Length: 500
Length: 75
Image (cartoon, rainbow over all chains, first blue to last red; front, side):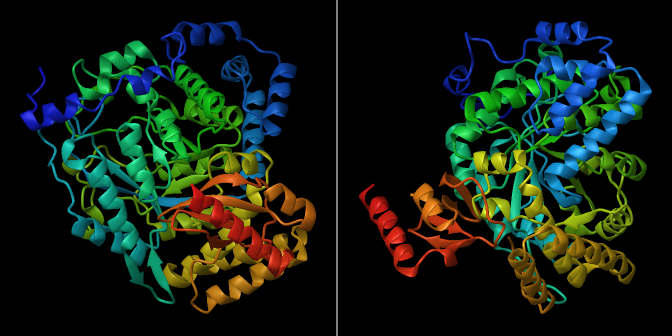
């Protein structure tokens, strides 16, 4: 039995969904996820032979979106040696599109009020053990000061539940407040340069509001693409129970001119192979209708949450072995997309999966409301949506990435100079974005090492920069290399935010 | 216009819509020269971006900017 909404909440809920902003994208009154068709593709592509899989890998290597039969074939591979080939190919695809950089970010939870009651979510309305709170703009500024001024993040993802107290107007104010924070650091200044959002599906008008304040990426996870499972997990009568309103929110974002959109599924709600197919169909429909695919794809696994027994009871929980497989198949299926692995995963899993094709990860992560400024060190389940698997500091994660041969990037250049939408898609698909990734990784890593690194991490970081500079000198035209050297020296002298 | 400039001077340029920090691609060259992008504001809403400004003669550059500004005023 759902706890009753207040009149204000009910009035707000009643005006959110606009059917005309769903139907216009549908074909023949149907959405693009045909559950039967997906299962049939998976069934028809069992026991694929090696030569076919290698042909599919070759297609991925040409940075071309796979078709559903091809992805279904990859999902059906059983030969362990062939899986090893696929893991290696996934790593190669990532290197081709993004080089060896890993972008880091932090989530910033701004509020946990929610009108929904999703069975798997710690923030669900009926979960009475959760302490409810929405940060004021001043509290958001304090969180930002810690993130940008003490830890050194340049990119955050702002997270809110679905509630009238945190509607699009409020979120727009929150984004402005975060962008306004500028903090003095050891040699320069710290600032959040890209605010991505993970929020509820919005109307085109509300998305235009967020666009006006300069949002980075609009991220919404479908949770599960399986219609019946979606229906069971999102109780009827709740706002989130409308499958298509959620499914088409990225379409609305693109229509509103928010041209960086991010997909995701919560793995563990339904069969992982089906969800991978759902993500592919989603990417294909965005490309078909707008010519712009997902900027990133996320694939979080269910993690324990306070007073949320569904999580322990789910029969679809994804094993570590299958988790690695799904990462490789997503990487090969949507080769140009960014792939986000979060601190939900343990340090060990992050070490093992980053080489498969990850492009972004978070660190120094705190997901309690107000947790960065409060500086609490232990996780507190009653103020978190779920429990994290890896609470290591950004400094520790960066040091480890450097030892693994990766350069950490704080680059936010693309969306500030028109490398967005179909232009970024072109650059990604032709492998040209990788050049920017490397150049901007060097510059932003230099900034971070000088402002925030421990002596030990700085030593490891310097080794990486030296290697990267040598590579750039060899591969890039002389005028580009000389410009990089000029910017690099200026950053060492305390200038900030120079980019290619 | 971007195609003409590219053919004549080998310079790549593209038009963006400016919304706070976000500069969204609107039209123009999709390729890049890998040099730092320099943004020239056309009005409060739009800007022209290129990493190749030095390849374009100063007078031609002024003409391009002025003609785009005139188009934007008319709209």
